[in-house]
Each structure stands twice: as C-alpha cells, then as structure tokens.
Length: 328
Image 1 (cartoon, rainbow, N blue to C red):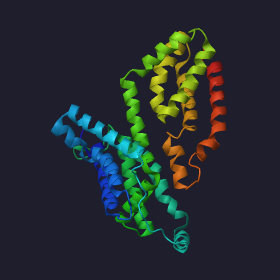
Image 2: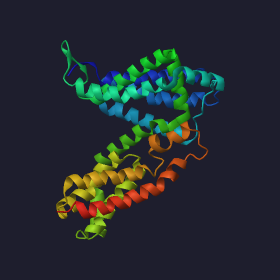
Image 3: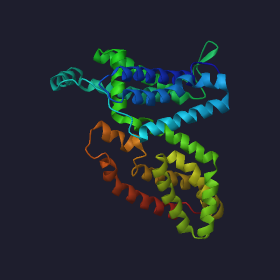
Image 4: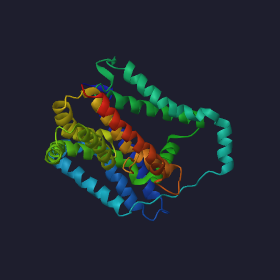
C-alpha cells in the first residue's frame, strides 16, 4: 500500500530531528556530560533513522538484538545519571513581555492546530489518492495525520513568530533536555507491554488468582480486577499496556465467562480503573513528571500527591459501579 507520506517517513523525520539534537549537544562545550548525553539521544534516534537499513542488512533477529542492546545502553546511561542539562541563553523578562504583547493569544494557534488537523486528516483523507498512491499511509493513518499536523503547526509557528527552523530545533533540544530521560519513557513502556503480552503474562495472572481466590466470590474478583488494573498501570505507566494482561488474566475467565458479566461495561470500567493508576505513578511521565519539570516545581512528585486522593476515590467508585451494573 504505497503512500506519499507513510509511517517510515514519520520515523525518518523523528530520527533526523533527534540527530540534529545530538549534533547540538556535542557542540555544547559548557555541558560537562555532553558525550554521554549525545550517546543517549543517538541510541534513541538511530532506531528511527536506521531501523529499516538494519532490517535489510542484518535481518530481523540480528537487528532486534542490536536494538535490544541499544535499549540497555539507554537505560544504563539514564539510571547512572549520565545525562545533563545543556547550556542555554534564556531571553530576558522584557523580551518575553514584548513577545507576549505582540503575539497575544495567537501563540496558542499552533498548539490548537495539531489536534484539529489530526482529526480532520484522519476523517477526510481516508482512501484519498494522489495518482497511483494514497496521500497518507492508510495503515497508520492517525500517526501520519499527527505528523502532518505537527509539520503544519511548525510552519504556522514560524510564520507567527518570525523564527527559523533551526530555532525550532534549538527549542526542541531545550525542552528535551529539561524533561530528560522521561521523554522516551512512554515508548519504552509500550515496548515492555508488548513483552508482557508475548510472554503470556495474562495466563500467569489467571493461574495465580485461581490458586488463592474462590471463582464464585464476585465482589473479590471485581476488587482484584479493578485494583490490579490500577497497580499494573502504576508499574507500566500506561493503562493500555496493563489492559490486555489483566483482562486476559482476570476479566475474561473469571468475570465474563465465569460470572456472565456484560463485556462492554466491564472492560470500560476496567480501563477507567487503570487510569486511576495513571494518576498515582511517576511512570506515567507525560502526565505526572513532564509537567513538573516544565513548570520547574521544587517537588517533582507534587502532581502525583495532588492527584492521589481523587484517584483513590475514583478507584473505589469504579469498583462499586462494576459490581452493581455489569452482571446480568
């Protein structure tokens, strides 16, 4: 299925941007850890930029092993504190105030354009061809639409601010340095979720639960499923990664088959329970760690501490909802 802009182009674009960040980091002589920081981002960007070449040259087994080694190196560099914030020249308060007065609320237009254009392209460009090829990758239409929207937002931002593409890359490096290793945590957790699914962890969970829990104890099974979704999400940082494991291990065999629960509301409330775990874990970096870093909060766990009471109340509410409405 040929397309003018497909998923491989998206990967290559990400890899090029990351490699530009690597080059800027190596040139930053004021950064005492510029070599290890550059190595970290090079390992990350190489999988996007050179992944197809590795597959064609080495074959899947060797390419996957090489990427696995890169993941281990990335984890070691982050875990041993080998990353450091680069040196930057912040704008003065007067410059920021002048820029704010000049741009006003128009500064939000690029950010608003991304979701709007992503949805529009996903809905309107499905099946659209240009010559013999599709305009966007139909198999990964949402991701291709998101990349298209991001490019359009960059163009709009350059037009509004009078900046340059290089300045956009510099600002990208500043944000990435500020966030640090947490910027790639979602991708790492998605990979980990795939490993758990391939390892049939759901079957292992089912076997453990069957040893200690009476299959006829409906309330206890509901509590285990909801709390398990929250806890597993806290470990994984992503309810989507926890969902197949806990649903295959508990919801499907014990609640849907054993207790004849309605599947649709059961799994929906199960996902909501997982989102409660999202509110309580630093592993959900995009939600809980990145905002603290960008806002320069003194307590990097303040977001989690603020959300904790709400998360626990919602989890209790989900348990009650599941117990009272999903059984026929």
